[in-house]
Structures are given as C-alpha cells and as structure tokens.
Image 1 (cartoon, one colour):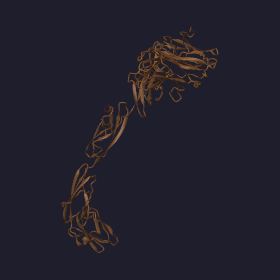
Image 2: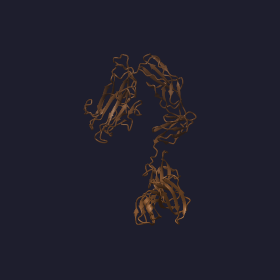
Image 3: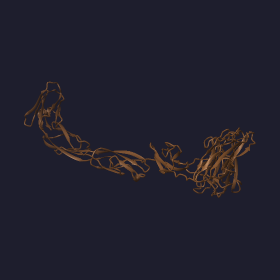
Image 4: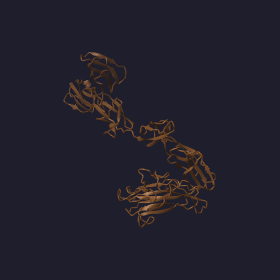
Length: 625
C-alpha cells in the first residue's frame, strides 16, 4: 500500500446534506519523527509514555501496515488497568454542518495471550478525557474477542467510527485513542497493541477573495558553517477549503524558480549551501485569485557557528528560597533565553532562574556576524536539609558538664557532605560544649545543592546544691526552714537521735540543751550537708503558760524580730545578753498586738527577749546572726 504523506491534504467534495461543505482528508501514518506527531499529545504524559513510535514490534511480531513506522501501545510490560491517550491535533469542523464524517484506522489483531487489551476511541471538543468525551467505538487487540467482531487470522484490519453530528461548528475537536492494558498475566507476559494509517476529515470554511497571507517568516535568514536548513512560515496564514500553497526557490532574485514544497503554510527548505531566494504563491480555488509574497532570501556563510556555553551546566534552586540560580552564557555577543517562565529577563548573557518546577532553559547566542547556536541548562528544585537538633545527654545538665549537639540525627541524607556553621564558630557536624551557664546555640546547615536550614537549641546549666536552713521556735518547739534551691530530697538529724525526711520539719525537743542539727540535701548536681548548733532553754512557768499566746520570729535573725501576741496588747519589750545585761528596752503606748523590733545593731550571739503583754511576762531566747 502506498502510504499517504504526513498530514497531506486532499480537497474532496462531500455528498452530505450540506452541498457546499468541502472536506479535507487528513492522514497520519507515524512515519516521521518526532513522536508524537506535531500537534498531537499524550495524556497523561507521565510517568512513562506507553504510546511509542515503532518500526517493528514483537509480542506480537508486526511490521507497519504501510510506510516505515506505526504507533504502538506497550501493554505487554504495563500494569493491568493502566491507560494512556494518544490525542490528535485540533480538527476544524467549523463548516461541517450535518455532513456525515468518521475516523478510520488500521489495527493489528492477533491470538496470543487473549487478555482484553484494546483501543477505545473517543471524540471531544478538548484534548482531555473529561465528562464531555464521547465514546464512539472499541476494538480488542485479540482477534478472538467479538469487539466489535472476530477475525480468523492474525493481521491488519481497518475500522471506522462515525463522529456524532453534535461535533460541528468549532475548530477544537480532537479524536482520542485510548490504549487499555489488561495484562493480568504478570510482567512481560501480555501483548502490545499497534495501530497505523489514521484518517479523518476536516471541514474548514471555504476561502474567499485574494488569499493575502502576509510575508515570509524566515527562521534562519543566515545559515553559518557552509550549509544548513531554515524553517519558513507565513505571517498571516489562511486556512480553508480551496487554499493551496506553492513554495519556490531560486539562486537569483529574478529566477528561474523551482517548486520545493507545497500544501502547507509552514515548510523546511532542505539543505542549502549558497544564497537562496524564496517566495510563496497562495491560491484560492473558490475565488480563482492568488497571492504572491515578497521575495525573501537566505544567506549562507562559511563562518563556523559560535560555541555557546552555559555555566553552570546544571543548577538547583532551593524550594522556598527568594534567590534563584544565576546562569551565565558565553560564546556570543547577544543572547536570548527561553522559556521565559521563572527568568528575571530573557536577554543578556547573565540571567537569574527561579522556576517553580524543574525546567530546561535554552539560550541562543549570536556572534558578531549574526551566526547563532544554542546551549541548554537544566535547573532543578532542591530541598533544604531537615534538621532535628539533639543534645546528649540532655538539654538540662549540671554546670561544668559536657554536651554533644547534633543537628541531624543518625547521619541523615547527605549529612557528611553538608557544611555546618555554629554560632560559637565550630564548623563540624557535631559541636561539643562545656556548659558553665545557660546558653543558646544556633547552627546553619547547607547541603551540596546550596540549600540551607537553621535551628537553635537552648541548654540549661543546673546549679550545684549549697545547703542552708533557718529556724524559729516557740519554747522548745522548732520550725526548720530549708533555704536551698533545686533540692529533690532532704535528711534531717536533730542531734538527739531523731530525724526527719521532710523538707521543712517541725520538731519539739524533749529536754533543754545544746543540739547540733544537720541537714543533708540531694539535688541533680550535688549532695550537700550543713550543721548548726542551737540552744534549747528550760521553760519558765510564765513562759509555759503563755508560749502558745505569744510568738517571736524569725529565729535566728540578722536584722529584726517580729513579735506577735494572740490575746493582749504588747506593753514593753526587754532584750538581755547572756550576762543578763539589758541591751535594748522598748515601751509601747499603743494597743498593738504585734510589733517589729530591730536588732541589727546587736552583736552576734544568744539573747533573751522578755515581753510584757496584759501584765503577763513571756521570755524567749533568740540567736542574733
């Protein structure tokens, strides 16, 4: 079979209800690269293309229906249930009306591995498989399934499916070939599905008047290196039934002219080795008029192409960073960059790229005589290191202890290739410190992609225990007060064989005398002991009667005493030293039941304080520190 040219256009007159509708037949035989054909798409395009171009195929063994290539859906090695759509370019149905039309294609059907691999055909006004896509037919790969029929032998078979008349009046209709994989036999146990020679009709509006297509757009007016090709197009191309394009070239501005391409608004010159002149003649069959473009030219120079380079050859941008990758081109005198997405500028030798996804940028460099070449650079996205700061043995340690800080636990990805800068100047991964006071340290960790993360940790220095206590008493009952900070356990020995584990015990001595009271405190950083000697005096009769009614505290004291009577007003106070000499005397003319007596001027030692309250005399001993 002689294969039709890629996207060849043959003007046919439809025999449908719309007498003036003209159909343009379009065929695609997948003979040329690239795949997918120009204007076609794969949906979805990732994670891998299941639709590919093949010159031969196995499982089953197939050669193209015609020409040198075909389209193959690789269902042999795919997972059951996977699908992928091969979608045509937009089809012009603007002048279809009610004309009947269809899509046809050839599919190879065989009898190996009779699982239900198939091609389902849809039509939609977009290139997507959304809710508006209309299913128009399905063909099973296996010839043994009656979908839509069975076949006796392996081979190529042609199927056509009608396009519903609801698809008319627009230029965005697409035919969708969905490959369906039902490979339930395991990896490399299924079979591939192959199609070829797709054919359908378009119904563009008929041309009218003079087909003014504007001027030639020359992709490469200067070819360097002695030879090359140029892509040509028209500034205002016209589509429609009855339009024909005739491209001509000559070595002279005046001719003679040779036809080198036709029936398309975009063409390629083929290889040129000398200066060449180009023009295009466009004709409208309906009006009988034609239009000839201005003559354009392509200069061929023997100068070599510039060597355009980009530095760095690859780059990474950190996710969330405010700065991008700096790309520098060399080898030309002027530069243009594409795509524009993520670039701060599209011209100049230095640009900053801040893409939101991995992007390949192309820079075109032009030298002083106009010769150009390109270079590419891939810019990827990178993540900053994930920090999980730890302190060993703890974030709270005794003053003088050693702590090891580590921002990445267990090594972590790339930990040994990162750089580390601690706020105390250390540049290793771990920072070992001796804790003498509460401190906070910060580390900046940068990975090989140049992405940084920052974390901080606070270390508390626990103080050593320095024990101390005070006491007050009424008669021979003493209240002991622990004044140590941060203690966790206490042990008291009252000097008479009795003890307590309370923090602030109250103890009544059974007899007067001199006692050594010892307190042992236990804390997180130290165990400390302190002992104090106290004198327990005999109780006088008057004191026995009144001790529950009058109190003096604190005892010992260094500055002042608080005197409180629970019944009577305090009338007079006398303080005597151990020799019985009165060293301070106060008469009170108030009705107060409490007062404060300053003793800070008295030397350290043991004193007796006598209180006259309600004609009752109370006597207490206190220790001046």
